[in-house]
Length: 437
Ligand SMILES: Cc1cc2nc3c(=O)[nH]c(=O)nc-3n(C[C@H](O)[C@H](O)[C@H](O)COP(=O)(O)OP(=O)(O)OC[C@H]3O[C@@H](n4cnc5c(N)ncnc54)[C@H](O)[C@@H]3O)c2cc1C
Image 1 (cartoon, rainbow, N blue to C red):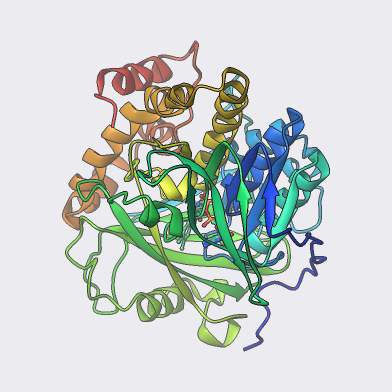
Image 2 (tube, rainbow, N blue to C red):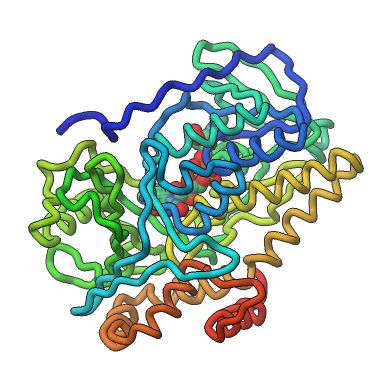
């Protein structure tokens, strides 16, 4: 087993050392997709942005590396055309999803829509996140990597308003970034939520997932695959799903995740589960332990806005920091980037009006846009928490192609805002009728 995650070399990113006290319009904690995209959008609006991350880029992040059409649109919005079209090193494109369930295998192209691209892709997070960080720098953001944020700086003793963040460097140096707006994009376990005393909404679903990189002759597959009938080594049905996402370097990202609504969520050995499931797949995939290129890693997936309100005392929560992953499919990159774009817009406006209350618009608009959909996602997660439900659905629903096309649109959250297709009208109405999460 080699220790490298990907064979693609990624150039290191040059950051800067911060002064003991630095001033900025916006301080952003975390340079994952949420933080880096927010920094790029704010810098493009002419704002002075400091983007802090405890790690140095490129760095690994446990993920499935799947980029749906929603992510492709965010890449296009950032002007990253080559990456969006899979022409840049490390980026691959796929035409759709191959679903495996019951005894059926079905290839479903990504839908043709006005609002969304009709293709998806993959890129390791080493490549993807470093690309976004560079885009943020290119737009004018200041990157402070290797700067771990320890918590907020308060404007007053009553802790009514955040006025910046405190950081500590790997070399022991410490300092603060003073900024009227702070964006917390520090991921599922970041320090900002804890320091602000934000509790996780336990009624919202969570998932834990494991992923491994395997060398495989199938790594040039033009489809990403998802497996809905997940079983453990003893053939027991599990409530979750597995994936195989081909990358552009001869490897595949293979993983599985279980929902918190399932019986096996706690107490499962996710690494072992993945190893035995991957080994049991079709022999021509060759997803056996000797083809692993790096150790299997696991990570949490916070879903359906599990930390709210999304604006708290001058801090906007973006991406996993606000628990923004889609409960239907475990997709979080696009939601982090979409929230980042809105956070940039709202922060920019609040910096002009100088009214903290204007930051509340971020929470309101985001919940209006996707709150209803996430409420449906919560119900879905509760239903499929019993693996028999998923089994019945795959056994009786999978053979019907029109139904599966509808399911794909629903699960991947891909409809037009002004639809000409009846399927989109139905799905949009369902989302509007559901109370916002
Ligand atoms: C196994 C697994 C598979 C997944 N598969 C997919 C998938 O295929 N497609 C998809 O769309 N989503 C997937 N997700 C979800 C996706 O990974 C996340 O939703 C996404 O990374 C969220 O982006 P983010 O910017 O909010 O946070 P992150 O990507 O977690 O970035 C947070 C950043 O904050 C930094 N940070 C943390 N603490 C500090 C600190 N104290 N100071 C400074 N910086 C700090 C971290 O170093 C990190 O760079 C998966 C998740 C898991 C666990």
